[in-house]
Image (cartoon, rainbow, N blue to C red):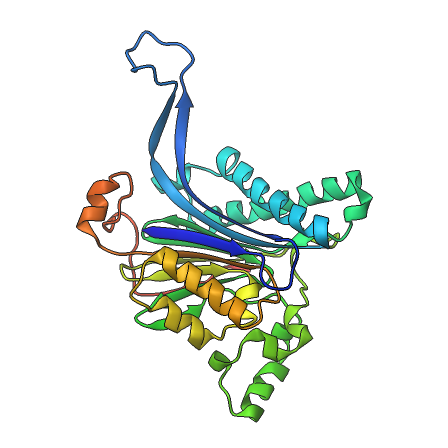
Amino acid sequence: MDCCGLTDVGRKRKNNEDQFLIADVSKSMRVHQTSLALDHQTRLFGDTKGKLLLVADGMGGHEAGERASQVVIDGIVDHTLNRLSWFMFNDCLTDDEFEEQLKQGLVECQRRIDREVEAIPSRRGMGSTLTLCYIVWPRMFLVHVGDSRCYLLRGGVLQQLTRDHTLAELSEAIRRKAEDTGEGLDDMPDESLGPMAHVLWNAIGGAEQDPHPDAQALNLEIGDTLLLCTDGLNKHLSKRQITEILSLPIKTDEKCQVLVEAANDAGGTDNITVVISSFTKDTESLEANAEIELPLNDALPNTDEFFEPIPS
């Protein structure tokens, strides 16, 4: 599992309202006093229980937008460490139950933003998107709100796993425009779809109502590549262009750099953030990172089916 992230202010903005996070999630124990010989260690760590990938795009103006995405990332970290159930790893929770716990983290982020707006009224309207992947190999749980995205590249085909919570997403006008111009949607960056492509109806904060996150679970495979990004990338790069860059025979950190540079070269009108995770079977890498268990776990389901139905 080779992960890397990169964020850039872009060519037009003065500040960066995007945030990202890549983290291993594990239990830990802080030892204050013991008769055991621990070689002066004061904190012990258990095995890695999962990998957490996040991107967030703040909104609400210079200070408020930057602060909103920070509040959301902090809220998810707190929820993961202090409220997310560990029992899922012992098959005591179903996929649906675990997804509900992840979705509850977004509601808690809403409460944090509400408290901040109450304390600082000038930040009213602050909000953020959030796209979250929690990976327990080979299972991935995806929770999403807003217009940041998660893509999966498998077998040379790029699939957008999330849907944009924008007014444009609700309209058939986009598809008609693509048909009228003779272009496929894969060849069209979002900037060409008009202003409605960026008007959100669903986000954390920004309104008094709670967010309505989408959630799904799927099985990853060796050879897959995940891309999480804010809309500063897909505003300027089409699905076809993103596929070509992710397919380049270069390292993950270099792919991040190429994506950001390409979006900037195409206009860079917004902050650009990307997180890429590639899953490869590499014996040397496994030996060097013994805590990351890449081989398939027979105890977990491994079907050929991408998605599983999520109850409403």
